[in-house]
Amino acid sequence: MISHDRYFLDKVTNRTLEIANGKLDGDYPAGYNKYLELKAERLELQLKHYNAQQEYIAKTEDFIRRFKAGQRTKEARGREKILNRLKYGYQGANNQWIDTRVDAPQQQKKIAMNLGTQVRSGDLALKLEKLVVGYTLTEDEGRKTKDQSSGNDASVLCPSSFVLIRCPNLEIFRGQRVALMGPNGSGKTTLLRTMVGEVPALSGLARLGHKVMINYYAQAHEGLDMNATVLQEIQRIKPLIKETEARTLLGRFLFSGDDVYKRVGDLSGGERSRVALAQLTLMGGNLLVLDEPTNHLDIGAREALEVVLNEYNGTILFVSHDRYFIDAVADTIWMIDSGSIEAFDGAYSEYAAFHETKDRKPVVDERRAPNDERRTTKGDASKVKAARPANSNGHAPSAANGRGEAPHPQSPISSPQTPTSSKDDRRLRRKLAALEEEIGMLEAEMKQLAEEMTSASAQADRKRVKSLEMQYSDVNDMISSRMQEWEQLAK
Ligand SMILES: Nc1ncnc2c1ncn2[C@@H]1O[C@H](COP(=O)(O)OP(=O)(O)OP(=O)(O)O)[C@@H](O)[C@H]1O
Ligand SMILES: [Mg+2]
Image 1 (cartoon, rainbow, N blue to C red):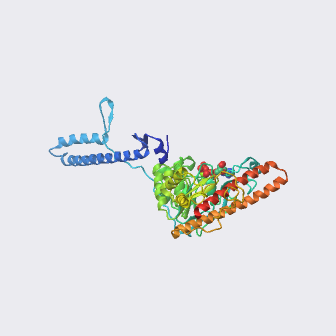
Image 2 (cartoon, rainbow, N blue to C red):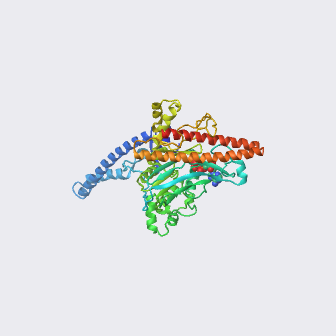
Image 3 (spheres, rainbow, N blue to C red):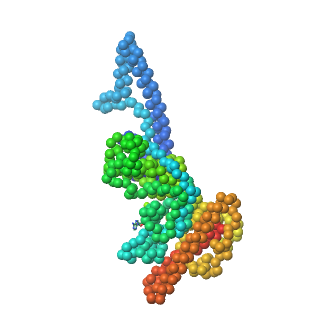
């Protein structure tokens, strides 16, 4: 198996072969993390041997210099012969070439990247306001396609569109590092392309904060001109750059000599990623929007990118499937799930641990649980801003609790209790406000659906009524799920 995914390798493999310096350079009976240890030990030992041999060579050369022309010339020549064998190798028995010289341990070359911005943005870098992302289809496509988020017929927002994500109202603040995660095809790239203005929003908007400038790194490197050379791609981004300066920059991204004249279209995936990253360093924006920047990158390059992103003085929103990388960089997780986004304040490992415990915990019936029990179930849930919709029973639109009863007394109209610290307080209020907005938005959608149902039923269009009913029930589920979250947080 060939992979650059350290987490995956460590989980799956028990033997590691390494190619370096143009040869098979190591064979370790271990998975990735153990391999790192074994390799470090090996390099340490090799360095010891190398140093000892270098010392021997220096001493012998000194002896030869001093005595070659003098009384001990015979001895010196003898030593020289032995030394040359050691330095250049020799033909042994059975015509075998024997090489006894110890090479200095070579560290893999790593990219050296500088990323920084001179322009400080406002505190708020990005705000999603009732944003719905997806694609508008031609009439023909519209008939064939289903709404991805609900599994029903084409969206009600626009008859010829399909919705990928109904985003809760989320914000990104200056300096935040947000990892956008989710399965293939869930709409991560589409959301980023909507933010950078390449795809129109189906409704709502992604608003940029004061003085925010986006640098976008596209997943499939669509921004690169495949017919240009590596050097031309750098000059395209910064036309006034001198060739020597561009070459120095490219050298830091491991393109040396004639490499810079290679056609981008002929490069390997990882090499193309390095060109795109080199371009990124010339752009100087203060909000990096990176779509799978580690794709194709080898482990060394990923590690270098981790370091540079951690030192970056701007804001970052990135998509990645590399859990190791996400854990090293992100302080916030946005997880796309069932056509919405669950936002979590914390690193990926915290998020994973939170979900593991949450999923193992028995569900507590909120209406019956005694107060103290409720408090314990709340716990880390305060880190979650907008959870996925529960796809359970279809609720009546007016009933928040799913049993046709009156809405729960603690509906989004009342205020939450005062939390302990003001930072938590602000965060909590933000989450509550976002949920309230989302609930409002869903309720409006529900109203529209109800009207459409009435008119479809008036026209005896039973197929349409049935499909609208399903959408209605989905939106209803979402509302009750958001209500439950709101109640949890407000407690
Ligand atoms: N221009 C387009 N028109 C219509 N549908 C599209 C268009 N581009 C992408 N899609 C569809 O939208 C869905 C989401 O695609 P997107 O590229 O946003 O997913 P993703 O979450 O980034 O996936 P991955 O993890 O594989 O990169 C897919 O089903 C895709 O086929
Ligand atoms: Mg994508």
